[in-house]
Length: 368
Image (tube, rainbow, N blue to C red; front, side, top):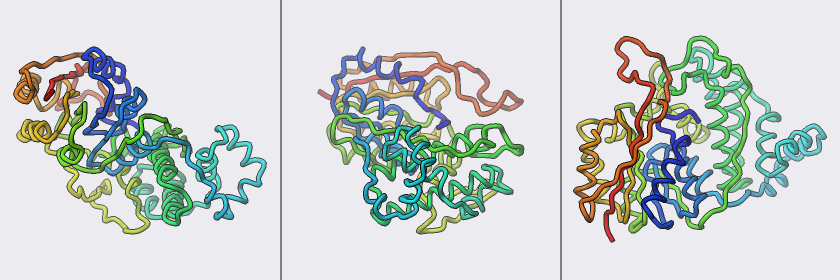
């Protein structure tokens, strides 16, 4: 998923820093999980990961990429859904599913992608047409897939793992065909080439790791208090004043769904109510106190903070705050220059112009 602050390209930098610091593998709190790239990388390396975030779409990714341990079964769905049984009798359907991998997830994805009847629903009404986020065909497919997943899960025909893995695939598939520059604060007024492609679902197959990983939709401070003692607190907070509920309200809506309660949308772009999802980390006035509160709340032995050279919290202040919380008054800083993610071009009044950024990893030991 196109995402501000996504760490996929920096995973080697992060895991290498953990190795160089000599932090032994154990329990980690990924406090601002986002798309769960770091949580998944830690899980792959043997960590037991507790991930958290305020956003519902992040919770979906956490459940799919951090918590799920094994390929889910759809035996009950096969037995109970006559339309799926009918599709499975089709040689064309079986060939297409086999071309994916033939797994349970890919059978379900093939059915959702090609065999559902589609028609205008809530999502297509609000995010196609005047709001040119999606073509009518793709928006109607999002409607059909999200509604079907809700029905299957609510009826107990698929378990939690299958539900979240397929829902994550829908969120990521919709993002690939969204008519945006990478965030959902605005749609583009003409159709971009990616938006004219059909919606595709490509579920990620679960990765087995250390048992006991967990997902949390909530404030990092409250989750840290609940978790108690962990080995590593990894902090990758928002760096600037952009609030994520306004930039990613469409993935948030897909994650929440609309089958039980019809949400109230507002404004030209169809925003959702923030529902407590606005972050103090996006305020220059409040960000340092937010960091102090999290450091006070955690039971972690080690803390590693991802930040960058354009963040609201100056590097010197970040280091000073960690030094105050550390057991020995010592901080270690790693730096890496990388190409910024850009959703727009240079213009008069644009705050961020440079193509290169410095990613900071700042470490402190909090307790023995």
